Amino acid sequence: MTTKKYPSWVCQDCGVKANTLTCIKKYGSKPKKLQFSVSTYHRGTCEVCGKEKMVTEPRDFFYPNFGLLEGKREKEKQKKLENTPTHMLTCRHAIGRSGNVYYMECRLLKKTKSGRAKIVLFGERNWKDKKKKRSIRYVEFHRLTKIDG
Ligand SMILES: [Zn+2]
Image (cartoon, rainbow, N blue to C red; front, side, top):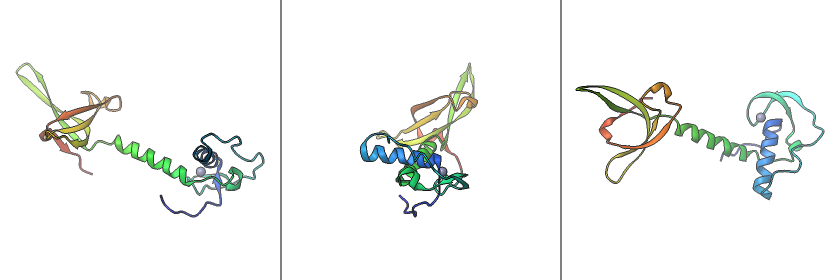
């Protein structure tokens, strides 16, 4: 975790979220009070999320641990990464004697003991549907082409 200095100004979103996470971690339950009933907000930049919003002092949220919020964001980033394809899988769709080749986006997970590739396949045959479906497959490595960038 990064060692950033404690923020002076935070938005309500970050304050309430950090307070909730802090209480769950400390006491195992949500806070009874999310924030002070009287806070003086002014327009500024939240030092936690970096957005320009109405901000107030962290005191209004009982000085929560904003680092917990960062950990949560890291997890979300990780999740996004898991949905990013790394390879194209070459597939062959046979129609009678001829067949056509098409490609599907996938993410290489690991090499199995038997030397095959364990992948997450995005979508079904039609690449336009790639957001709809994900499935785990085991394929031969020669069918995979790395996506550049
Ligand atoms: Zn914020």
